[in-house]
Image (cartoon, rainbow, N blue to C red):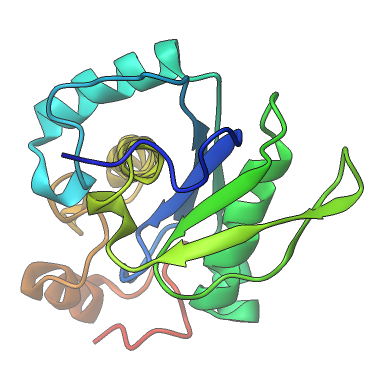
Length: 197
């Protein structure tokens, strides 16, 4: 059973990303604030769910959340500032876009940077949580939004750049994807700072 809060009484935003280990496309970063008492059958780390279940949960989260936002950080910026910094920057931009200001931030993983709220003009306390998407509901919800929004985009890209199998591998480094890069070359959305072949 996932936990609802780390800090009782605080408006808490959960943050996560998807696509960090991919060879191409953006890293997708999400922030979600769920209402108190939110209950959702099957809410879990997005990697543990089927694509169909993730889509069902996405609709529910986007409808029921107090606030949510998804931000894409493109391959060019990833190459420029590295994938860790791009992931943190993306999650902070998603927080910037929330229509409700959080009093506390939960982040999946073990790295984050101090977040200065642009509306309140003060630093918002945060905690990083390893395996947070399997621990807290808000992080699990952010995980699902980040993953579903990115998968949708990569499926669109797969039509623009056929032959790489992105509609199945979503840009992850599968054998077929690496083989396609060797044959067809890299696309403009491949991450040049990653080992592509």
